[in-house]
Image 1 (cartoon, rainbow, N blue to C red):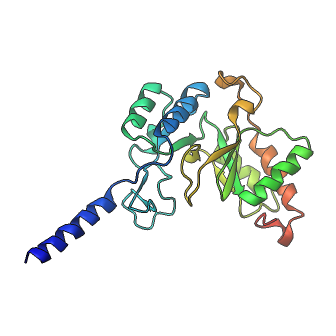
Image 2: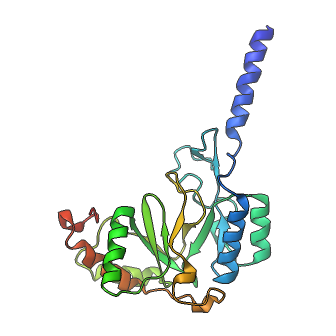
Image 3: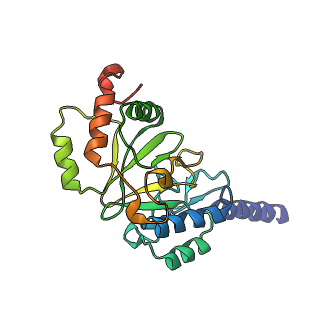
Length: 239
């Protein structure tokens, strides 16, 4: 009987252990500093991601067992709670040390266009060679996101409708969306990083109004043009 109870207790301990959020990677203070920089230096509304759970840090802490973006989406608080208030930011990350940093895109905040990492690296080199001015670029092991000036869904719809062809691998982070920022853990593993930091985008790093961002039309036009010579017609920017 004692042996049976002992096994049951051990199974219960293992189950409870697997339900606890996994310890954050890296220094948790880095996440707080990054969130405060976004909120105060550039006036970007941020909020913490839900985080991960499980002994192997592979499952999302949300109730959905099949979550496709584990740890990299808002849950509580919701997306509408995103703020630039440093007191709220400090409270959130003070209670959720190491939580991922999410930018609420759209409105007055930056939006983004993302594409596969290999294609993005080649596209950025090509755009630089063409003399196109780019803003901050967020990179994960699988995708890069080019930050652009805020745009509305209506404006994006008109832009895409006017195109004969748009690569199917492009994703748009616009009004009502969010974007994972450094130094968060990427959805598929690895760390989110700045390929091009905001401070190097052409403005004084201490003033939000000086942070220059390209217009979405210019970025999409350039990416569509860059994809025209890709294998398969560039439908997935697979070069």
